[in-house]
Image 1 (tube, helix red, strand yellow):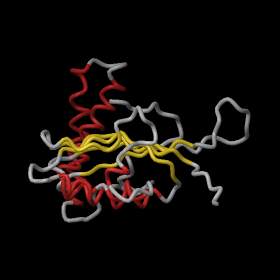
Image 2 (tube, rainbow, N blue to C red):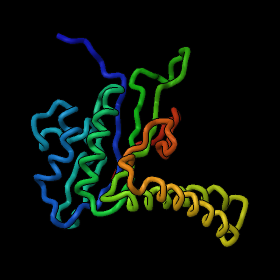
Image 3 (cartoon, rainbow, N blue to C red):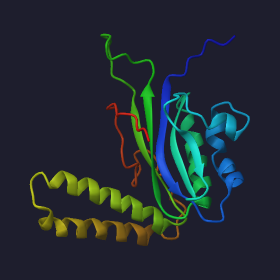
Length: 207
């Protein structure tokens, strides 16, 4: 019997608006990279999180929404499943959406004294039906982060120029990538890298 212990607990959190014509069967197939990685033979078997208090992978047919609050135990190879997941969700999404992915170092114990640091990591994935939709959600998140930070020092009414400059950057990027296939998930450390990276521990999100 294998004694392998996955080094990470990997948590996905987000909400994706789906096209009205997308049904359960298409959602199950789009999410195959996740439940297949978890070792399940079907969506129903793999949709549950390893934590009972988390809703897992849920398709809300009336609202045409995909809700993600799901944890799986795994390794760095899970990143390959994320690439496939993004391509699948691009095909069924109705608008741009962000998905948070947190890698928790399962072997790191904050209570014990040990050399080195936690290998926790955090990435933000972006999906959408087209490049414009993806960049719109990226732009909105960046504006929110920048404004929240700068409002500690300036009145919100003073930040119009900052927002305008962010819009210029995204307009330039869109003009360069409008005919490119490099959308969905940006490579780590690339020119359009994930919106968040780091090894600081982040709290789990619960619905």
